[in-house]
Length: 147
Image (cartoon, rainbow, N blue to C red; front, side, top):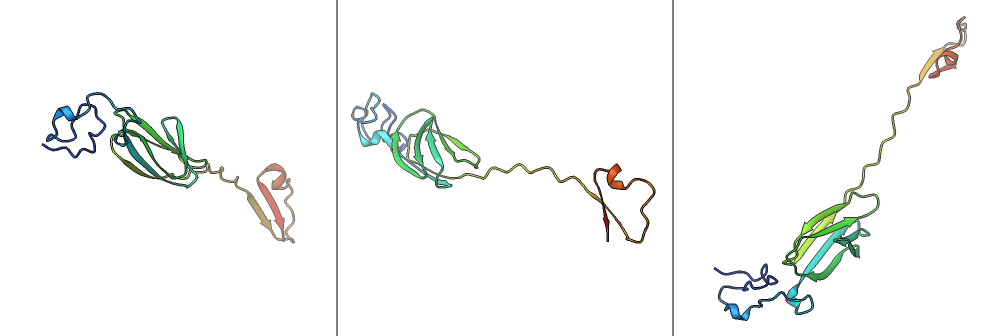
């Protein structure tokens, strides 16, 4: 069985292919600066372009990101946030190059309550006013209009 070498390239003690003798493979974990193989490429495209991108709790970019991060067998949290937008997060395990496209959705604005209803009473100018008090004095929502 052959391995493609991509997913296992940072796993200590795992050969990149079954054809390689185990003695040529590392038996201890590589440090982050030991070789280029100990990092993976992380590419994040984000909308809006001024969104902040975090890896775990560290800010790694404002806007799109392209950079190398340590190749590790542990879960990492990739987040994107921007004011007025719904935050986004995803858990990743950086054992191979990762490309992510994120489009943050706008937060919905809270809608104001509907306006209070207003009752309008129309009457002809020649009509005499009712003997009782006008509706506007007894009903706070009534408006009397004469034309």
